Image 1 (cartoon, rainbow, N blue to C red):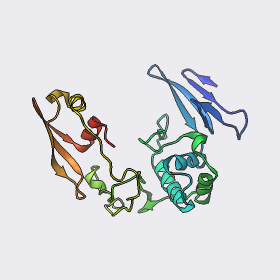
Image 2 (cartoon, helix red, strand yellow):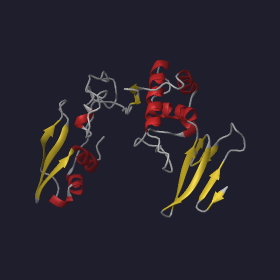
Image 3 (spheres, one colour):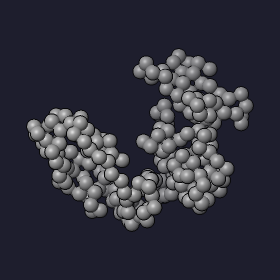
Image 4 (cartoon, rainbow, N blue to C red):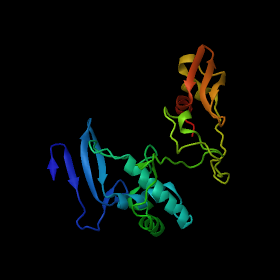
Length: 228
């Protein structure tokens, strides 16, 4: 079916799938022309979507109980992000939660989703903002120190993730990288903390360069330097 700049593509059977850029997807695909570019949107039910997310966000060989917890968190997050008036609800990347179609589904992720069907996380009878991540480096952060509002259920707690491969990491920063990142001040001679969170993470920094200074929040610093 084609309506102006939109095209719907459906599999030839209820249990079939569709190929898009080397991956298979359940449900239907909507192709839209968006600002001169072709945009593909996968339309499918929540419980069909989740096994792929669980397998993409967590190793599928992990214990079933871990996969079950991830299923509940991912379901809650997805439902909290519903946008009825928008073309789509979620992106397929870490900007929402990772989704790779059938390629990241396994028997274990399907079992985890099925065994937790309809289970969600709530606070004061409302869905929580169930954000999650790979590693916190030992402590989670108070949400109010990252976002404008402190969520009562997102408080700083110890995180026993020392076995994570990204628990500690380094990134060398050479002269050309610093020049490219802080071109308006001719590079960087030093980066000094101006404000930190209760766990010691940077909130704001002062970057001193050959031709000036910059005051940046941590998010912009991370983006400029390409940090995790």
